[in-house]
Length: 270
Ligand code: B12
Image 1 (cartoon, rainbow, N blue to C red):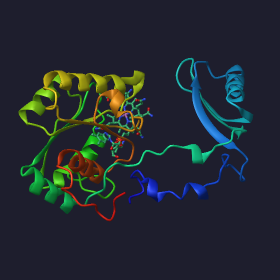
Image 2: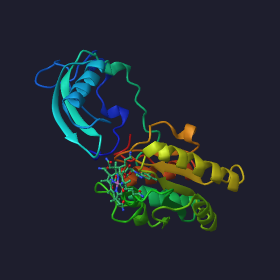
Image 3: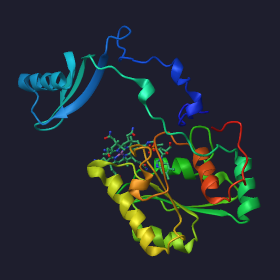
Image 4: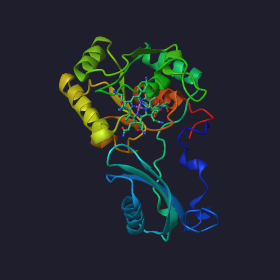
């Protein structure tokens, strides 16, 4: 497993081995030290610094130390505050979402598609809306890949059409139709005013309107700020977050699009 990929639940120690309660660590075990950063709409002066400490106190950081304050444009100040919280964290109560498919090797991916789909698996990818952050989707699609893994283009049995940045949803729908896409891979990195949420739900609605039920391509969305497990709410089939590797995506596509039982689990898998 690469350091950036999502760990499988089996990689964590048994719940019985995890301490029942922990507190943040700063200088010594259990001192509760945390560091937070935020911006206040106030010009940088003593009152603004006092306001930052007041906020820290209200957040339960007590005592709080102002370690950084910097004006960032007219009437705004950026702060970093360091201090101790009293809160107790119970790791045993955390619900971990387990990866629902095994990780496959490149060879297993090509073999499963060739043997069971009997044609190339077609993927159309894009950054939609005004989003111009293509590094993430390129990391998944382009041959150069990410984190030591080759991108989807590298797989002989996968045809990749990468439409790039700022693609309009109607254009994406048309291209997906023209290419007879099995899967549509969309990237959303900018989250200002929940743009990633609005763009994803609009994209999903457009596909469901344009294609008959049961014929909609697999809708896969990725980006660093999506909530794990929010696919159903957004009307898509799967969400991939921060640190996703191309191998995870290719394995998921086989899991979702190639008839069950076609691929065998690889030793690297969950
Ligand atoms: C590089 C960069 C740019 C470059 C983009 C160049 C390019 N061709 O992509 C440029 C300079 C153009 C740029 C512009 C802007 N940027 Co910018 N940018 C970044 C930066 C520094 C890195 C992003 C990146 O490349 N990450 C590396 C990739 C590999 O990671 P990733 O995108 O998360 O992708 C991984 C996963 O999320 C996932 N994934 C992503 N997409 C998909 C899709 C699928 C289908 C799947 C399966 C997986 C997947 O897999 C990838 C690999 O693991 C980030 C800050 C940061 N450190 O993250 C800011 C950042 C994203 N930008 C930001 C902003 C605000 C902007 C601008 C609005 C700035 C401005 N005022 O002009 C503009 C917007 C331009 C636009 N129209 O979109 C903000 C966004 C804040 C927010 N809340 O949304 C950030 C977070 C910086 C910040 N802290 O303020 N930016």
